Length: 430
Ligand code: LLP
Image 1 (cartoon, rainbow, N blue to C red):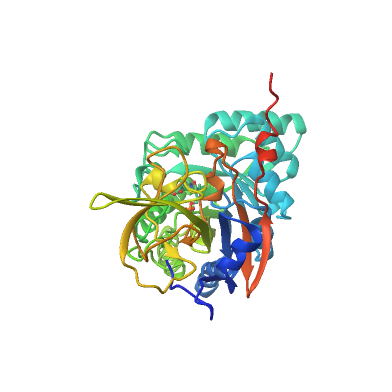
Image 2 (image 1 turned 90 degrees about the horizontal axis):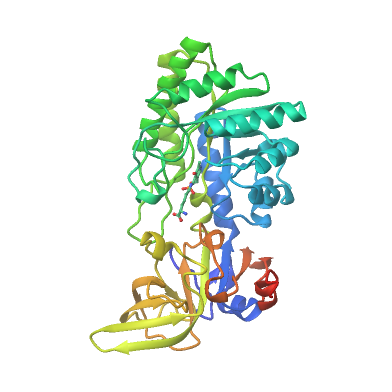
């Protein structure tokens, strides 16, 4: 988490706006983004490529935070975006993302989703498996059209991260396996298909990665494949997509490499290997999701009940929980907590911050060092901007929070709070 910024009232501010004013205006709980932080991260990635002087594209992996406002912001910043479902595709288009800048990922894209992508004329489909090639071929024939495709391979590299978010290893469900020859077979099929224009190759080694080593290994692997396929099929990749996975800082002890250092080290390796292999220099693509959104977002909650059993437990309960942030329960993810109404007060108690959901695992922060809290206090959990709202649920029929963008002291509601009416709107009854 970043250093805490306060105003003259001694309250936490986000994007220059008083956190307590935001709660008074929009209600609680509330997800708040500091837009400047998103823009800064984007620029760090872009600048590193520009300084390295290589052709590149940064596509935002929108599963991290998919909101029309976010697609609008990303579009304005000149990025592309990665979608993984029909839902993300329609949201990206609604946000004004030009279709040609959209790439479509997924290990089981539905025929209807592929059709939507073809109809929208998106930039490329990242082909993941043989069934998808068959579906896509049928659709393209029926519509008598063509599309650009990228071949996703599982490079057999294990990223050092949680096993549920590591994706590049051989037994991953994503992408064509290299060692068994499936990737090569798939490439041949795509090259032989006149309706599919193979523009490049893709790999993604995992998520919440702190060091460049895995990416450097992936570059070596991918370039050696490109060399092999260039020799065998005269295939020349226009782009090499190295996926996302750049780590974010959740708690002070997290030390992910800065965005620009990741890019710098990746590019150095690409330059070296492409030159050695004597290949045409491809456009380098990356797909950051978390690293653009996580640290920019905070969730504000209101403290309600407490349960204190001396020497046993101190629970502080807030008005949200696993419904708006499943990550602690799902991945044992760590977060910090800040008392937004008095962030600089003496921190004298270690408590467990829990939610309001009927589940003992509904813990937001295991050992939070906080001032003594009271009902009505506003608690902020920083770094909740990625995979928070997008993985939110209505468990226990709790409505999902509203989302606000703040920048230079201005606030703007970008997703309204769900109402009980919303929650009942799908129920038909007997
Ligand atoms: N590209 C591909 C092909 C991916 O599968 C992913 C993430 C990304 C890019 C973006 O990765 P990022 O830069 O955000 O790490 N729900 C989990 C994370 C799942 C990531 C899935 N794929 C979490 O909350 O940690």
